[in-house]
Image 1: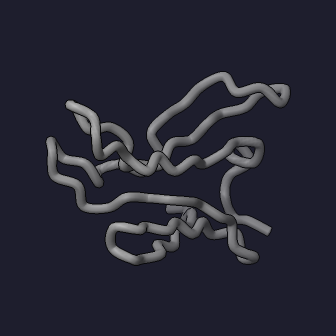
Image 2 (image 1 turned 120 degrees about the vertical axis):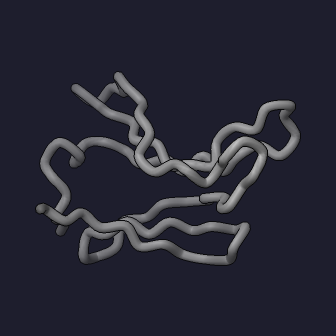
Length: 89
């Protein structure tokens, strides 16, 4: 059960936990991996903004889909779980 548009149904949302030992920090976001014919063909930002320069405000660890269709994202930096849902305008 989900209220996400059909365009999302075969895609994956992936947590990029973030680097701590790189010269230029990277990750700290969720990306959408788009699939066609069971093959990945594109990656795009889904949720970002947790890394601003060298300032980190969250470190996403994993994403699961709840029974009601919302996404739940765990953050081990803040010890939080975020609920992400889709709403039409």
